[in-house]
Amino acid sequence: MKRGYNFLYLVAVSILVFTGICWAEDAGSQSNTELTEINLPDATQQNSQPKLDLAEPLSEGKYVDPVRYTLGPDDVVEITVMRHPEFSGVYPINLEGKIQYKFIGDIDVSGLTKKKLEAKIKNIISRFVINPEVNVTILEYKSKVIYVVGEVGRPGKYYMRADSIPVREAVVAAGLPTLAAAMRRCRLITPAEDGKAKIRNVDLYALLYGGNLKQNIQMHPGDVLYVPATIMAKVVRVINPVTAPISSLNSGENAAQTLAR
Image 1 (cartoon, helix red, strand yellow):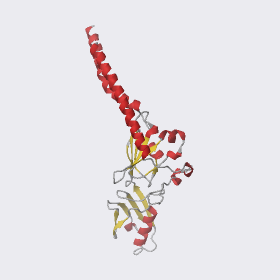
Image 2 (cartoon, rainbow, N blue to C red):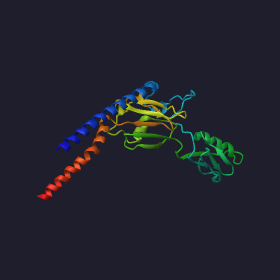
Image 3 (cartoon, rainbow, N blue to C red):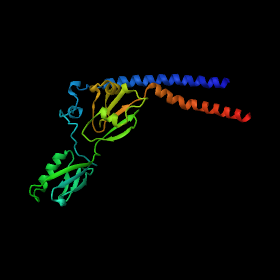
Image 4 (cartoon, rainbow, N blue to C red):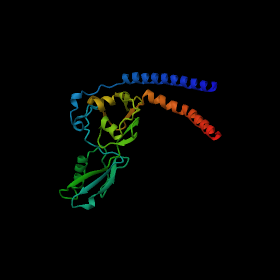
């Protein structure tokens, strides 16, 4: 009996220590995030059609249209030239951003939109075809990815069908936050080559349940949306493995007593 009390005492102390560590980590991460927080665009810029108006400025001063998609490595396109099947076909884009086009050779298509590629192909084959009618279809979108990790229904890598995607669309695609998610303390991480990643706070609760479109930040290729767990969820996950031996021990004693009867 004394051994059991000692064990429960150790479990209680461990829980208190772990809870304190979790509070300290959360407070530290929140303060660090606030130091690197970036001012978000005003909510008046985001109307009822976010797919058309949620363009976010880049460092070069240019704007990205979220609906536009620029081609890149691993994408697959289908080129159709009306009445000229010899110039038509399906072409994967290699790691150099080029396609191997029939009768022409390698064509650099990286960074081109579908319309620009149609114009480029039309200009190239106009030497062989009079007034060519060219149509380009993107069959596979694989050059741009984002990551949604943590407490969501389906964490993982997601391919983008535009040059940017709002946080809300990414979270919905990932299966929405779980019951263990700390939705007010999410972070959007933009990696950098120099190792100094940009971190922005995202309040998913205000976005999803409060309608605060100011939190609907645009995610760009390579961005990571991290949805952390609540402190209570962390504590429960530590308690479960610790209390499991007690449960199995009690069940074993009950089984022995039943057999003895």
